[in-house]
Amino acid sequence: MSEFRQDPTTREWVLLAPERAKRPEDFPQHQRPMAPAWDPDCPFCPGNEQRTPEEETFRIGTHAGWQVRVVTNKYPALTPTGSLTRRHQGALFTRMDGVGIHEVSIETPDHARPLAEMEAVEVENVLVAYRTRYNALRHDPRLKIILIFRNQGKGAGTSLAHPHSQLIATPLVPPPIRRKHDVARAYYDDTGRCIYCDLREAEIAAGERLVFQSEHFTVLQPFAPQAPYETWILPNRHVAAFGDVADEELSDLAVVLRDTLRALTAQLQGLDFNYVIQTAPVGEAHLNYYLWHVQIVPRLTTPAGFELGSGISISTALPEETARLLRAQVRQRRLETED
Image (cartoon, rainbow, N blue to C red; front, top):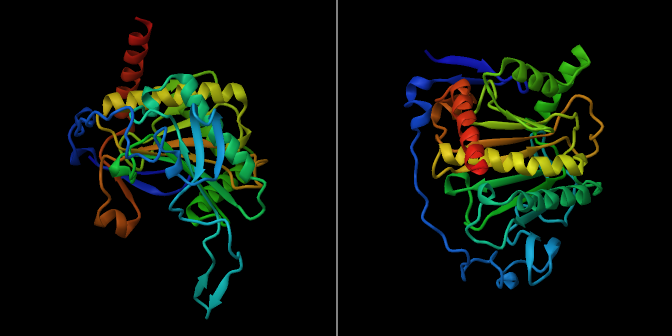
């Protein structure tokens, strides 16, 4: 039987309708064609650096032997110049220049090496680039939110196969993000506690949606997922802003993120997904009521008329079942590593 569930962190409803799909282990799987380690037509491959914008904002490694590069987006959604003045036309229509920052993190020189297949130190380099750019931009008084995200696969919106992620910083906080913080603030006002920390501890105690834990992080399937196999990575230490993650936590996150993506990839061959680092707005890093975290959303289904009309997502798998399957994948991967 289908079931409505409410996400405690947003107060939004989702509909779990597992009878609309096969068993959660039987989602369609698609083998991706093998890609070369170097593509002469790829602007992100070594030797093609002149095909990306000259403004390189961060690099690990030498110019000729780089490991990670961060460059401005060649086709940016936002530009760093313009006015922040809001222009009103009558009582209803408001405009503002598309001011902001749009960068690309080229995660590896290897054209065919996604995060799930990297060594932990390679993933850590990517995370170091994220944190470095986040902390550089958080001091720009124009910027209010810094979003770091990754689109993998055409179903997730990517246009280039080379492993990369993006950063977009905007001069306003979008309403969906503000609502998440409003819910967290109201919970803190009522209880004096962080809703995300309480949720993490409740999921650990229940165990049924828990995937695995490390010293610094907890991986789980949320109670009310927007999509099958949606996965959250929550810090065990209360920190509101991603930029304030400690070095030892970043090293641990590299292993946790890679192992989570490996488990998802093993379970869902040909996986298209998005992940987003959800973090506090700029200037609100001191918040006691918000916890930064990683949200991974596989693209296994396509929103249709009901979702668009109602705003209610439909998930065709129970998170308790997907957590069980991912736990098995994590155990299997670890056994293979030990052997």
